[in-house]
Image (cartoon, rainbow, N blue to C red; front, side, top):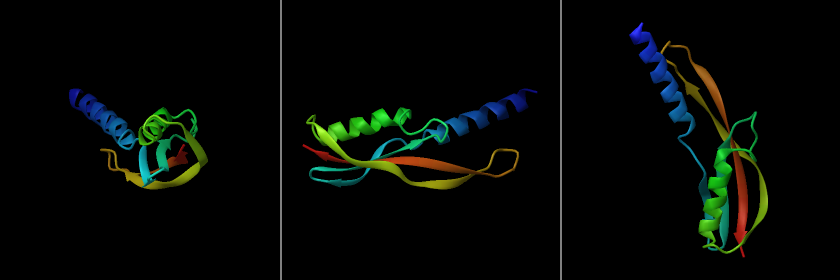
Amino acid sequence: MINSWLIAVAMMVALLLGGCADGAKIVQEHDMGGVVIYPFKEGQGPMLSAFRKEGLDLMNEKCKGRSYSILREGEAKGRTRVVSPLDGAQELVEEHRWGIQFECK
């Protein structure tokens, strides 16, 4: 019984860590701006994603505290990955990403 419980806990930790592995990041960058992307859950949407604030913080950091303009934002290319829980079954997980193109003022 303890082994089953440990396996279940290990699976949950692996799934949680795997889902949080990618946060917001700048994927294109130039002197006066760039493009930030961040993951979001389909049911939650990009505006409520915990990573949106992280993305906005990256934009603020890039602009060194000056204001910025959002030129365009929308769904960016996501990815599909295979998750293999310990029971051997494989599951495809589709990850959604949101992109924000910005320019420092």
